Length: 390
Image 1 (cartoon, rainbow, N blue to C red):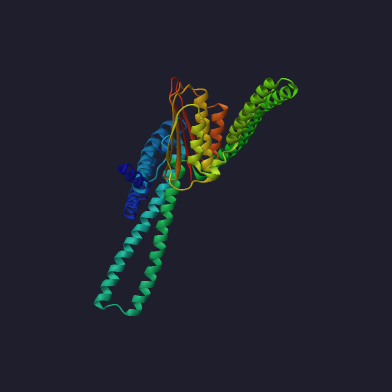
Image 2 (cartoon, rainbow, N blue to C red):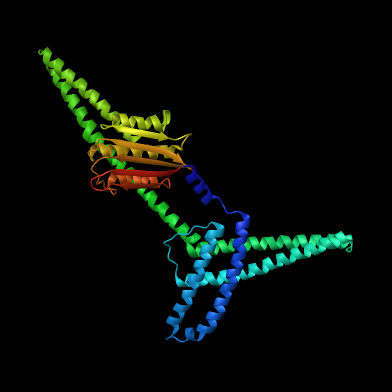
């Protein structure tokens, strides 16, 4: 486990400045390679690109070299700057051509800035040597130091701006651009909002159905029993039997009403916390449920509520539909992400598009979480939810 943690830290820790500096210098070299390629390919393929009949073949040859150079640039960004790009993201030829052209120009400008920085370092050494020998007047030294400091500041700012440009054009080429990411995010938020509204409406309909078909019918039966007991004036034994049935019916009504209230919102979440609320789910389930809870510290209330309903719905489905004989619930907090897993040994075949699981997916998606259902025929069924706590 320690080894895994070390690897995770290594992948998330930003690269050191010597490593990034080496990546910048290598980028200057690849820019020179790109310039030479454009010059040679343009000279060799230029006439064929101008003629319509030979243009497709010449363009294909040109793009072959461009793809190889962009693969080199992508590897440079990943190795020296720690960038991670989508593997399956498709990039058009026009986008690759534009990227390599901009990257080549930016890399050449970066080469000039690096050369000026090296030249300034040489001048600084010469100035220091002249100062130590005493051959340079002090008023000239002050002027040279001020001018050198200003030029050094401008040089470093130029390198920083060029490095930011290199990173930005790489993200736009090898992954979704910022505008595309924003558009996707807006679509996801709109879809999740609509899904949450649908899930709330479905939950309201289910509550109304539980009240109408369950509790209301039991209250009607309770009223009928009390009415029959009231009419049994002379038959004391029959009246007592009816009252016992009415008392039992009232207990059943209270139990079902309490169950409906827990499905609406468990009050134990506010008073006792998530662990105790999950213990209540285990106690009310008709099959054995083993809960492993590994969370230190407080969780955001929306995360606790979503985790509770994921466990409650999954356990209820296992008890009612999967013919399971045991359920294991694991809740763990890792890197500010709450992982919830419910596994049963039932027959499987759960439908992820069902109303219950769809409602859970909408509830989890509203918190930027992920819900995954793995339920092959024959089992087991594994419901996993990842809920960010940041």
